[in-house]
Length: 410
Image 1 (spheres, rainbow, N blue to C red):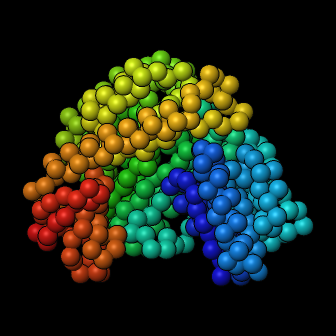
Image 2 (spheres, rainbow, N blue to C red; image 1 turned 180 degrees about the vertical axis):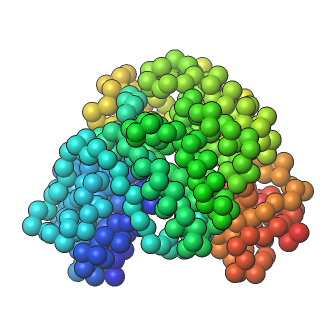
Image 3 (spheres, helix red, strand yellow; image 1 turned 135 degrees about the vertical axis):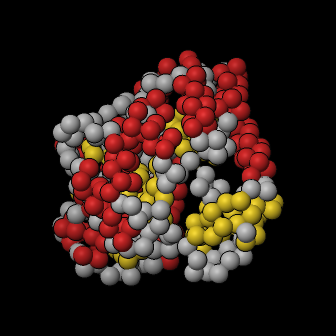
């Protein structure tokens, strides 16, 4: 048995399917692969805890650690006696690395990787939608972010290969595809002709007409190109849910983060989308307790939730990552960052409840994820009693719980 334990983002979830396939190709039959995340120190701690637990529960299994944390701090895992092998982010998608265990640590220079080949994932166990990686790495250097050192510079899958993979996934029966990447809106900047993300979205929707739904994972609002705006306005198959890499609602903090947008840009993006797609919903990544953030600055982030109309929040208390400029800035007490994160999450819960309340009484088409639960086009989870084998179901929303909507067949 090969088990892959995934931490972190949707891109990791996608790559975990490729990792499992490569491990099988290498002939492994009793292994646990940990695909780690390096975004926060807490993510690293959780991965180490899970590794120790796995060794106690499966003492005879081969334990392999890979992913962003393995790439950025291989020594952390090399010091763990429970770990048999450590592979970098490039090596984890090469069956030969799993097959050859002569080197316990195989982590090469990620910045030496210049191209991105599509990973042809054969299945997404237990998922109703498929992820499609079209981009990896990042050329930006936000002061808090360790990810470029785990993923390397920005690289894009050639557009023809991405379209063919979307077609293949659709033919396999997936009704929804999620385009994913580390810096998705930078797609194409490294390719001949510099095609944009919007160009890719348009090509997939045009050349794969059988695809029912296309969704974007996370985008940088200021990098939205005109082709993407056209798709938002004209393509109903592009789902009206946009998760923004906002990070803060205060302009000075955004400058110290070395972000490329201001709070007004986030608000303007959401307002423009709503004019084109009134049913749209928005999520955002937000950091609480960034170095030098005072209460007034944090208040600007709290107000951004209402002013931009955000509903789905991913909130992180600031976590200093060794080697980043933000780690050298004057730090807030950990308790302050955690307390602000808790307040921001509470604000997010209220915003989500208000969003759910607006949907009560509406009629929605759900993509069913499992028996009794599906998602609206704007990604709201809905519980409804329907036959288990239906892919789509038209429902009327009758109520709302804190974490989901309740509906009945329409």
